[in-house]
Length: 314
Image (tube, rainbow, N blue to C red; front, side, top):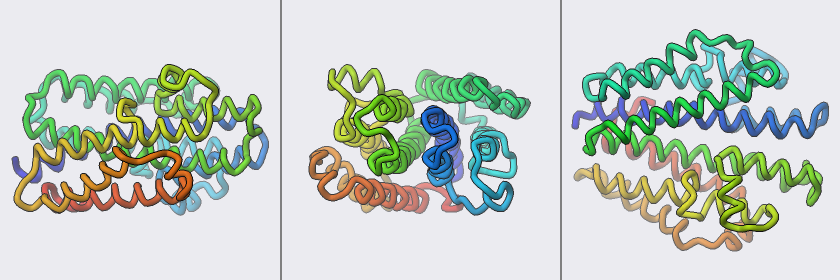
C-alpha cells in the first residue's frame, strides 16, 4: 500500500476516535462539575479538560480565564481549534475524501454525513441538557463509523491501518483521562468514601463506558485500585490500555515491513508490561508516573509508525 494512502486511512480513524474521546472527556468533566458547582474543584476540573485535550496557551489567548462555557466552546465548536470536536471531524472527513476510492460507499457516506451535520450544528446546543445529548451524538457517530468500517471494508491493509490509528488514539486518551481525573480524586478534591466520591468515580468509569463492566467484574464498591486496574490491565475491557496494546501489537505484525522491526519490538515490550503487570506494583511506583511514561511511549510508537509506514507530518 502507498504510504500516502495508509497515512490518510490511519489519520481518518485517529481523528474520528479523537472526536469521540473528546466527547467522553467533556461529558465526565461536566458530570463532575455538577458536584462542585462554584468551588475551586470545579474550576480545576475544566482546567484539567484543557490539559487532556492539548496545549492551554491558544485557549488562554482567546478566552483568558478558564470557564465551563469557554472550555466547552473551545473544545466543541471552535473552528480555530484543530483539536476541537468539529476540527477533528473535519480532519477525519478530509482524510477520508483523499482516499475515497479506497473506502466503501457506506463508510464514505457515514463520515461525510457526520461532518455535514456537525458543520451545520448550533453551538447553542451546549447550553443546559443539550450538551449531554450532543456528546452522545458524537459517540454514536463514531460507533457507527467504526461499525461500518469493520462491517464493509475488505480485510486487508486499508482496514489494518485504520484500526491501528483507532487503537493508538484510544490508548493515549484512556491514559490521559485516567491520569488527570484520578489525580484530582486521589488528591482529596472529593468527599473520600462519601456519596460525592462514589459519583465521581462512577462518572470516570462512565467516561469509558465501563460502569456496568466494573459492576460485573468486581461486584463490590468502587475503589481507586480497581478502577485503575480496569482502565489499565483488564484485557477484556474494550477501552483498557491492555486491550489497546493487544490490538496494536497484532496489527503491527500484520502490516510489518523491513523497517518496522524496532517499532514492533517496542510495542511488544509495552504490551508485556501490561500483560504481566500488577496494579499493586503500579500504585507502589506511582500511578501518575506510570501513566506519564505510558503516554510518552505511545508518542514514541506514533512517531515510529509515521516513519516506518506513513508520511511523518502530523
